[in-house]
Amino acid sequence: MDNRPVAGVDVSKYFSDMCVLSPNNEIIGELHFAHDFEGMTKAKAVLESAEKKHGVRPVVVMESTSHYHRLLFYFLTSNGFDAIVINPLQSHAMKNINIRKVKSDRADAYRIALLYRLKKLRLTNAPIDTLFDIRNLTRRHSDLIKTRTMYSNRITADIDQIFPSFHKAFSSISSPTTLAMLENIRRRKRY
Figure 1 (cartoon, rainbow, N blue to C red):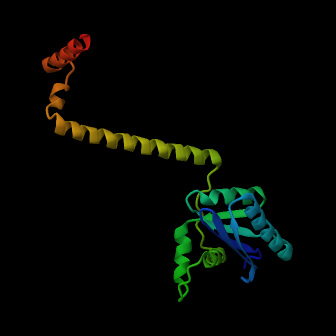
Figure 2: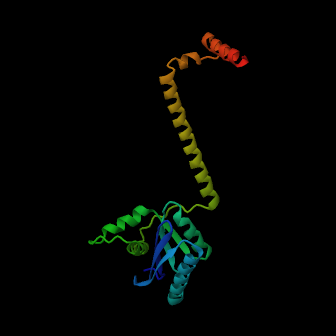
């Protein structure tokens, strides 16, 4: 059995719930804290208290929740704690263990801590800041291209309904129809 305390953290958008287990899986600390400096400092104090009590630094396990877990992850790792980010599908599988279905953030934090004891964790990528930023920029670029294509197709559909022979008129810039239309436009601009 691992002799380190383990903290499970259920991360949400503005707040997190943390449950700290002793090496023999007794709850030795619980905390509901905000994702601000004051809240994270309180979480750090609870973890340091567990470290003093057991003589070894606790490991922290949290779900990957969009980007909300990143702030807490970097705060904890920069303060010397081992932080593990897991796939939410793993923690959701733990919900089927109990007969009674209890859904609360405190209960989820406890289950996440227990997952560490099962030794069946598959870690998610915790990318460095630069890699994460490049990944986000690539996704935004891809979204922009998809949106541009969608609007281009909508405009083409509208033009096809309003001006059905549009594709014939502008299929070639040197076609007689196109040249005649351009000449008419040029003449109208003179007057």
